[in-house]
Length: 407
Image 1 (spheres, one colour):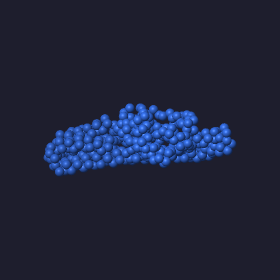
Image 2 (image 1 turned 90 degrees about the vertical axis):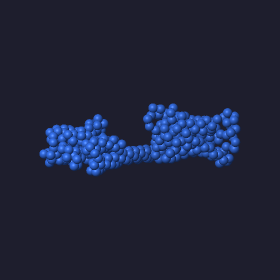
Image 3 (image 1 turned 180 degrees about the vertical axis):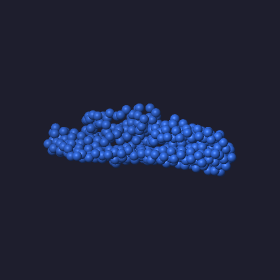
Image 4 (image 1 turned 60 degrees about the vertical axis):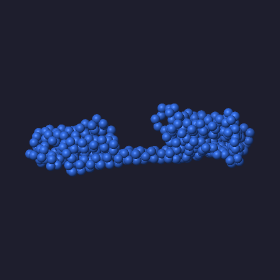
């Protein structure tokens, strides 16, 4: 029998919503109990009875609303806070002035904190600060003058709600990070499984065709060479797992496979794209592509321009070094920028040759590479030592400031 994986959705917020539900019910009964024990001391008890009837019905009727973030909408939060603020302001109408001046509780008492905590769990510390500030103003207005107990309670609610809101925001960020890590882990396991299956079948057949073709010579040698190129392309696809290859054609000058990639339409994309998926098609038998194990997110326009600059660098290798030259592409994902290095094993560029080429009107490096990176707010550095090859280092900031980001 096939194994079934059970996927459970975890939410760090759900226990907080359950606790808030219980808190609202318990504090509602607590507020009613406080009123019952001091009923005879109220000047207008019928005002308090009316309010507590509304509070009782409201608390029980809105329990589904505080069962999760989906049902706890902004209109509900506004109405809930209004009930709490109305209870605070009605205290001076219902209760005796002497009791209020002596520090007697408001009508909703600690039930008010539940309304503030709902803001904190739903929207984070900023929402909590807003709600707790309104409650603080209402409490000070109800007292008439700030007292030590009033100030103490106001600060307690304010600090506690903001702290809980901040913890909720951190928990949400951690949950998103964990979900992304689990997604990457699952994709990696699937990639490894596909790699094993392909290695046991297709790659071995291609390798055998390459060896037999090279041994037979003639047209078979050409077929073997093509099989070797396809093997490299397939290995790159399996290791990357994200390359949207659509069709394959042969470049006779390089003797290598040039893959025409159907890039996703990122003009309307709201999020970044993975730079690896744009650079992986450049990998061939003579071009080695080294990438990080995790996605390299970059602004869509910046990613396309950077990939085009890498293509221009490889085109220079093909034109000036030859089809037999080897090249290496290295991608580094730094905290503030993305660094892509293109290196070849050619004879290098003689000193002064770049300036001479620009003077002759050949602006491949000046425009196709440096110009693109300058528009992105990045840099392109070219280091070439005669006899030791050429290295082009392309750096692009994570937040692009150039023209490409607004195209």
